[in-house]
Amino acid sequence: MREKILVANWKMNYDFYETTSFIRNLLKILFDNKINHNKKIIIAPSFPFLHISNQILQGTTLSIASQNIHQKDKGAYTGEVSANMLKSIGIKKVLLGHSERRIYFFEDDNILLQKIKIALKYNIKILFCVGETISERNKNVHYSVIENQLKNTVFHFSLHEIANFSIAYEPIWAIGTGITASPKDAQNMHQFIRSLFSEKYGKEISNKISILYGGSINDINAKDILYQEDVDGGLIGNSSLDMNKFLNIIQS
Ligand code: PGA
Image (cartoon, rainbow, N blue to C red):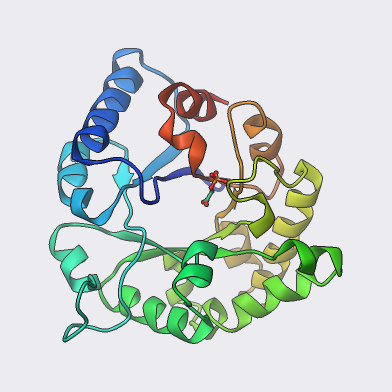
């Protein structure tokens, strides 16, 4: 059975105090109340708080992901953070391909390809996001859009390397909008993505790869979406910033 994964993508929210107190409270609530969480929980805070957050979670089942890395090894890239820097503070996971990075920071497939390479070089696992716009869905080209996003990036990598990936399907029109894909639409797309992995890498890999859904997951809709056969968890923005909602999602 594939493990269920929940990733809290905090984006550019929460300062030092908010980040550390949320994580400490979450741990306390989960473990003091022995809350049964059969899902792997990953938190993605902002760069300045990765180190302390990672330290707080040492020895627990929760872990930390970075929201980004730069595609180059090192050098004159003012303001950027390298994979090696993240590795040196014990970060082992990164989100890549998020639509906010693609749209606001012009990260195209070529840049994403370089980012994947550098993450793999430093043994950092990748949660790679794909998703279509509303006009692509309305034109009924959403399946080919997702297929191309994968072909241009993740599918460049070998059978051996693919074990380092999880995928997040995040329809852009669902991110931060309060509108989610219906459980059936999510399931159909996830099944399609899995079939692409099967064609490219074989059944065994496609049965193993975790495919998360993201886009306006909340404590009310989580159950219906997360229980779809090919949905292996969620990438959660807004609702992961609210302790009660996040706890409800964890337990759904
Ligand atoms: P949302 O964000 O849950 O606020 O829609 C999800 C994401 O961007 O990963």
